Length: 434
Image (cartoon, rainbow, N blue to C red):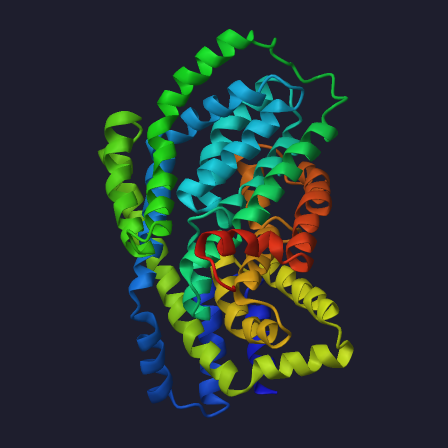
């Protein structure tokens, strides 16, 4: 009964506007005061869980995302992709999706992706006659690709909480991320195929296209080296994720200041301040959740959930479906970090008990929480995209639901019921049985 009330406190406090860390703190305080848990045990436990070198990668990747956002890399990436697909009807939408995927692999952040790519693409799309409700919905639905295509701070959190390989978790979300990118691009072209208000630029001759691609590719190359350095260093066994994040920070400073020249003293300091603020909030939230998750484990919450789900159905695939519905709802009412920290310790033991690989579950939870960010009624990423596009949120709802129904949901079903979509790359790179 006490665990149910603690969960209810979290779910009810969030819509009331209470900051997320305090929601978890309130639930923990309830379990201490009412249920009699000893704070002299919980406080040291939370501290011991926080003292992990892996967690240093999170503020470092947050800083990298901020510097690459302010540094001007987004424009060069958009211009490069535009050469290939920008001259189709609806092609700028494909440019936005692919650019979001590439930028997401650099920043690892949905917010940074939509802020950077959206601010570049929305004026271009408006100028070329694209419906802005559609455009805002498309870029918003593509922004969470930064949570799926590595490096991803959320996968670092999942690996840390679930005691899994960070590298394997990174690799598990690549397949779903690529599938989602393809589905969003195709769906965008289908939805805009008969829109005669969209202005389409005349196709380039092949020779000129190759020349322009080479010039723009050269400008984008320093930014594209970022994921190569980070992921190549991790996959090659040269660096740990934390070391790779530190190298990424050191690399992004000269790139932003000297090559793209978007960074200056003022916005560099603002990135540092923003990183410190975000890190403080995340660490406080993690500390509270670690104590609360320990209480949940001591109360046998994962076992209770499994018993409840098994009472509804003993079929593995039905249990996975119910877990997906639960995670979608959690993703709708929480940000991706807090949702990841809550769902992982509670649901991972349930997934393992029904025979789901922890690495496979990393991809399932990643897609779920990414979709929750753009699923109404809460949909924080969708509202952020509408604000950047200067368009009413109501105009984004219908196209967003189409993208969710025919791109996000098929990706979720594919990664849930076809484990190889998530596991083929970890097995290829790491070998062995995952």
